[in-house]
Image (cartoon, rainbow, N blue to C red; front, side, top):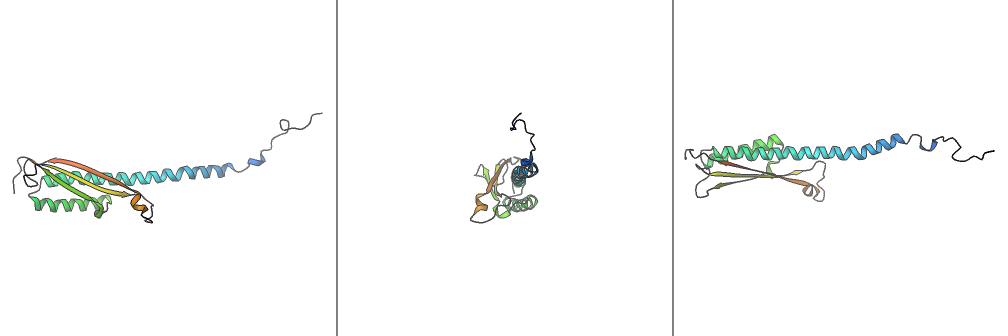
Length: 156
């Protein structure tokens, strides 16, 4: 007569019944939530990066074709406002700097080269403004554009 042991007894599997669904749901949430957040955050950063690049390029083009410094300032303000509105960039955080070389001439002047630098900070989504976390969780985004003013441009 054989003594019953684990190898000869049928396994009923009752100890694991019904827990697979819970494990799949838990594993799905642990993996899915960070991936969705990463996609949303990268989308926000990419959108702002395209906005900053557009601002730099369009500012350089419009200043290069302006009829003097006053016209260049008006165009720059209008373009910065339009790009900030279009791409959802906070206008107060948009930093724009324009340099002309050679500096001996006025800007814009025939033959000058414009260097435009635009920068901002992208706040990551769902970060509360508690204890300055929103400032720590902001990604700096910047773009540069260089444009040559036509040497045949008419001086104002």
